[in-house]
Length: 338
Image (tube, rainbow, N blue to C red; front, side, top):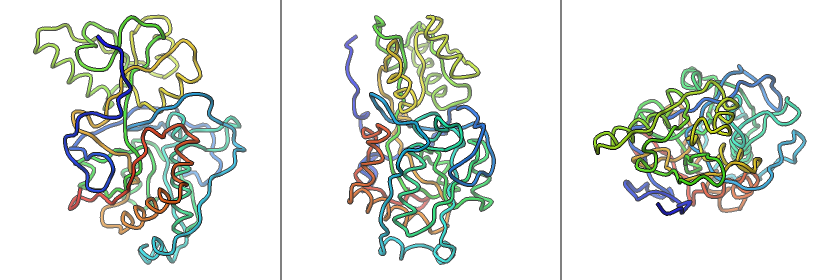
């Protein structure tokens, strides 16, 4: 099997109008992350485990200090004019984040008090562009849908992928691609990237996650073809998973590309293999998520497009080594206009 390849995407299945990438069909996605132990840099509503749908890539060091200089943006009157009256009058954008979703998405800095990460930075510069004060609130992966519908936040930034089921309840403004990858021991004599490459392998994956759903589907393909399926292993923590991988008890670990890139950049014994769209067998985008009909998706997309145009968006992705997940355009995604 040829060793490629970090392909920039998978074959196109559904075009997303003016999104720079592709549209998903209905796919649920989640992956467990650690629980935060403190809150700072914003208003905490509750701590809890995190989850995410996609990711990015990176190499080399990422600043994880709590004192890092914030990336800020100037206000855009045209985007701000699109805001619903209630939000404009409040002057505040209440942003729910996923507690600690694995670095570099949203996580506690080295001071164990300040929340940092790409999700927070993107939300903050959108608030700036809309002329709103940024208010950070914590939630969990399990609770964000109910809390968003209950009006506790205006938007959630939790590495959430757009899918048909979510579009029944929520609106979206896309801002990044969503990929997954395999983490393997460096120098392994195999390359994990698709169903065939997993035949007979031991693969770690989070329980009840989108990754597990993909691997289960791949195993079904292998069995239908008369080939040995992969054996899937679930571990309670990332630390346990990495110990199993390092000791050779599993061959690979499938998880969001961004978080695994972060791990690989800090270990000389691990490497990334393959790249899979988080919406497999279709494709998905990561998006800011709003209650359906809130009227926020359009101004949010307008702000993101202004940030893409002025280069601030690129600064955030470069800081967190997520440039491979950049989109060229944001737009609103609703049930009527997915």
